[in-house]
Length: 165
Image (cartoon, rainbow, N blue to C red):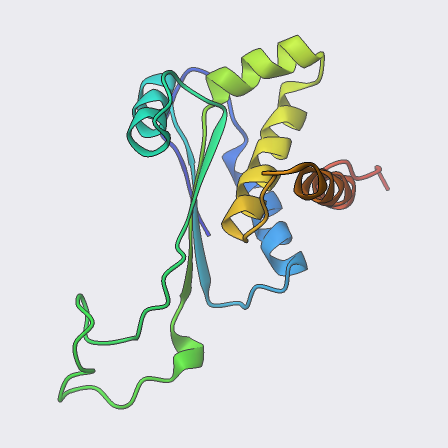
C-alpha cells in the first residue's frame, strides 16, 4: 500500500485512510504481495486527470485506475527474460499491481457539506468506492449500483464506523 497526500488544502488522515484501503483489500481476499497506490491530490491535478482520462471538465471527488493487464514477469524494467544473474521467478513473490486511486479532498469536503456528513466519513466512502472500482466493481446499471452501495455500507460499518470498545 502506497499512500501520498500531495495537497495542502484540506487536512487528511492519510495513514488511517490507507489502513481502511488495506482492510478492504484483505476483506476482498487480495493476496499479501499486492500493490495499490492511494493519492490525495488538489483540484488542479484532479481536473487534469478527469479531463485526460475521463473526458470530463473540472475536478471530481474520486478516480480509480485499475491495472487490468495480465503481464508476464521478466527482467526489470522490461518484460524480457529473468536474466543470467537471476534464478527462476516464483510467481507468488511477484507483487500483484492493482492500480491507483485518486481522491480530491477539496471536492470531498464540498460534498460532505452538501450531504451534511462529517468530512472524514466522506473521505472514507471515497476511498472504499475507489478501491472497489480497482477491484472490478462498477455502478453502470441499477443492479451494479445497488450491489456496490451495499458493499460500501458493509465495509464502512466494519472498518470505518467502529463502535468504541
